[in-house]
Image (cartoon, rainbow, N blue to C red; front, side, top):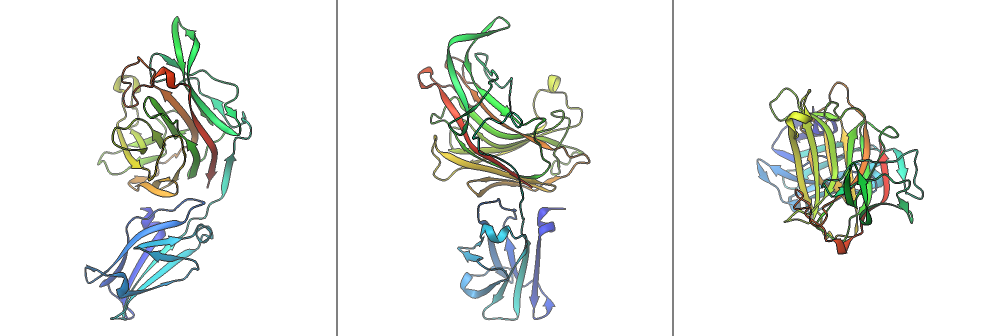
Length: 361
């Protein structure tokens, strides 16, 4: 089963007889997200050849839908009705040939919204870990909200924090909703601003299972040929110092049952994809979203589809996901900490800012 099979149906006819000579094709099904028009790339073929737009007529059963540059555009208010969009294309010269596509629209219901007017301790807790280098530490604060924003800071301290006999001169931060809010399936979206400095800082918006990491899963990966690869981490967004792109990474991490982190060390497999954000500038807000359901996970940046993974299937005991926002630092002198590099002391402090979070089902 795939989402395409669940939500899309294509029919083609010559007169009243089923016939595949003329066909409308959807390049990639995805459900779209609240607040943005739903867009689909498509093309039409006639007897195996691509048909030019001027060679066929188009009819819609719903209002306000239009086609431009081989792109079907469905306004958010039409998608939110949850109806089925039917598009029929008819050959202008050979009018007996037509093809119809039926797309079931996704309707969303808001289940959580936090605009960070205050720091809601009934929803959030600070994370006591997260630092990625031996010079930094992640202390828990009482309040991460200031001026109506959730602010996770990267700092150099005037005096070190001493723990277990070690001195820590740098701090980073993270918050999560573990044990306070979690949801199985739905749309998770946030408006975030990354630090203005590129290197040495690593920010992320991700989902984790309510349960034991690596042992409890969101879904099964179906394209490996193995009996089981279970996903228990969804990285909706990761921004770090990538040498060639200005954008975000979207990744799922998979394990087999009984995977031993202590002895095996790394994920069994990962599916990650870098997305170049049009017009991206460090220090400016972007909106990051994912839609997760039984047979697909879809990532969006500023309403545009960035990645789709439909090679998944539900597991028997699907775990709900809680939300995390984290920021890590590569302090000066720490060496090249994997892929996020270093940040000079004189450019600290920096901060990862979250304007709002919304969750839908």
